[in-house]
Length: 312
Image (cartoon, rainbow, N blue to C red; front, side, top):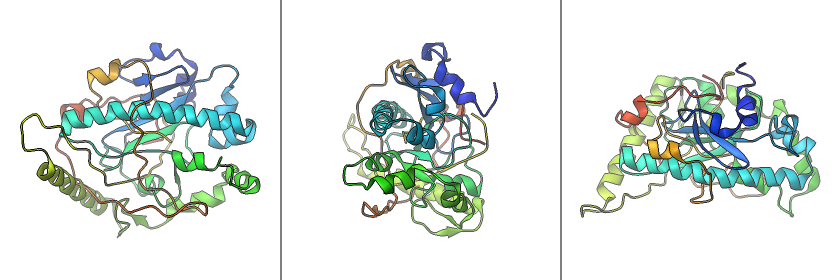
């Protein structure tokens, strides 16, 4: 299948026909798959299913959703994605605890200018230490404050009653001139916004930040045996890439067996949305703390080259 239409193919299939190595979970309205080119240790895509009355053309992208569906119906599609992203995030964070001993934020959001067809919500872990986090455009397209990565909760706020219809209409156009320059802007750390000239230096910094986070969690963890691992708040990110295989949460390089066996995306813990992008109808987000590179885990080594993805 063409890499450009790969996601649409999965969205039209019976989710149970998608191999467990690709599918994380699914519901009556969506299927969540592992990103083929993970930008974080965990990276998944939540795809709305093409089912009547929805057509593939209406779900081609966020822009298509806004311009071809009534506003209320478009909002329903996004709320369904949010619900299912919450379940996918829960599965991801269970695997984090199993492999790393603690859980950290998972960012849920869309790329303003996606590189493949079919609406998809990205769920990406906020340490940004994925195997395919290699280029400037990867960093700039997933950075949580530069503007190319649109957090799901922020997009849902565009539907608030106090938002001017004309402003919503202008945002719904998703014009390339508003977003494309972001990919060529200076490369900023997704945690502290420090400027980095090369990817090797940025990746070294990200690894150090994650190491600090792990150390902090280790020091803060319950001393008694059997104490519950602590959830760690503290970073954010953003991304984009070339055609290959979407606002949601990310999945692990290699989800555990119990996670893969899940067949329903029910509402549970909400996806970590990380820092919010500054918009005229909301306050600027708090900055989160950086992190450092995790040790290799069986989960990471088994990372599947799953179906769809933003791009390598």
